[in-house]
Length: 65
Image 1: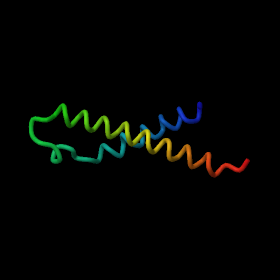
Image 2: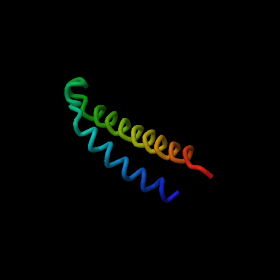
Image 3: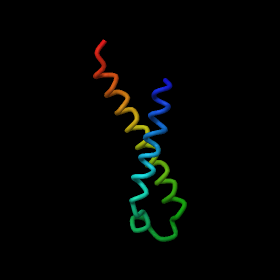
């Protein structure tokens, strides 16, 4: 389980860095700042979860016993 925690941390840094390139100001309506931030947070958490599990499951499935 220790590997998965490290993987979550590493992927979180990558996702935050990648999502920094998105200009979310033009996507959302005016005066909807809180809703945009909540969406941005949930999108980031979902990406972190999905990418971490994809990498972890990939390495588990390709492991030769």
